[in-house]
Length: 324
Ligand code: 5GP
Ligand code: MN
Image (cartoon, rainbow, N blue to C red; front, side):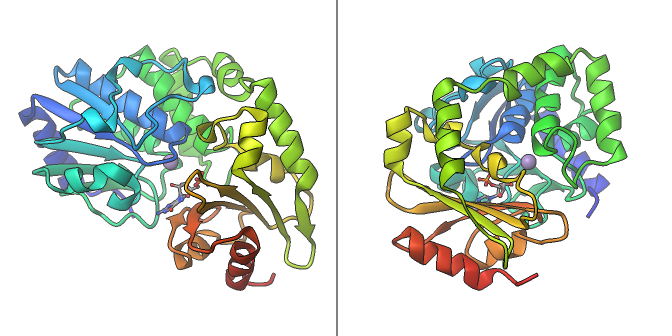
């Protein structure tokens, strides 16, 4: 699914005709969401638009993303009155906009820029390319045709999306194109080692201890290849870690030899269980997440279980996993 050139032209005209724009991304945002919102926000500001940026609460950057430029564009969803033009980035469907969904669906023009294979094309203009490793890859490729310019700060934002969504250029979505773009972003001033230190050496001691606790309780089932663990709210409180710091926690399960699927069950503050799924390249976990009401990529996906307990949610997941 490549990007339709006519849609790019329409997006370009909408941006040219607008004085202001709201840039949004999905709930439980990750590095690609942060990098896309702030990178695109800065590009649009540079083009002379009044820019506001947000995502479903809490609109805070986790500590390790605080270095990102463009934070001054961020505004709480409660203070946002989207009208005119909204651009959604890294957001597979309008439901992922959480409390912002209703207001967004009422605006005249929505540009939907994303790389999820299950994108619902909810925009009035859709720039969707499932072959892109990150949404920031699309932003880099299309900036010129959208009439937008890059600078060093924007390169830092776009590189952040690339390096996080590709697992530091090692996941199966990493292509020669990804490296080419990364190389050009480095030439523009993104510094790989500095960003590595910020993002991947930015854990607090509380977070590291929570990781240790999680790994120590992980269960591996060699017959299905599933490694799973439940993380109750109480544990987050005990370790003093915020939920929005736990986006990468699942990565600590993925180094296990012989596993096929990693599942992290996180109890939300409303008691529901959010399930993060990751798989090795030969196992499609996106289909599993979709059949349970969520979505995502082939090897990184998620959903919120309607079951009341971890045990039931685990059984529900196992019922959808096809044996190897
Ligand atoms: P994570 O485990 O990091 O929350 O999510 C992994 C991937 O699955 C991300 O690409 C995210 O956008 C997608 N994803 C997670 N939860 C949902 C969900 O409830 N619905 C959809 N459509 N995608 C999800
Ligand atoms: Mn992404």
